[in-house]
Length: 170
Image (cartoon, rainbow, N blue to C red; front, side):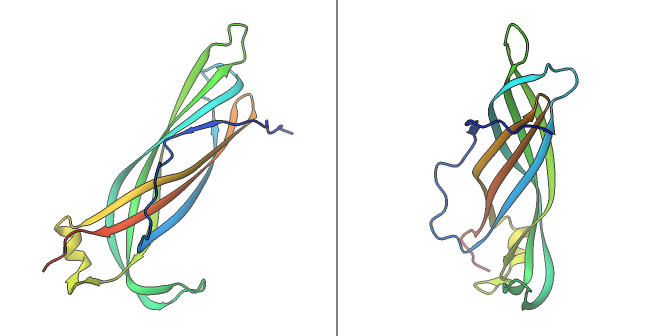
């Protein structure tokens, strides 16, 4: 059985500030197990995990107007985005020189949903998207990582996805 090592691992990329009163947002937790590539040496100690995000696409889907099983009011529209996570894991090699190595990972997530109104100030959100009047900010709230064994890392990234509408006029 793998032993989870205790000790702090530096998370690089965590937001310094979060929006104070977001109106249209979701929080997502992304757990993942990473395996060090075969060409890299084994780990002795995990040092840091750096994470950066990139929005790949944004679209709007029509949904029922209802109350979800979780009690959320569904407006009839959801913003759906695909997000790419770029990650860099830095570690000390389990070898006599104890050199520092980095492993790079990319992960494309699909279907992060944010419930939004179908209209803002009388304008269709689909029109606002076509006119680039919808802003999406992705904030990294937390990065947790633990070395499970000499080749395996468990990590969990918590994101806040905030949607804003820019100076709306039809």
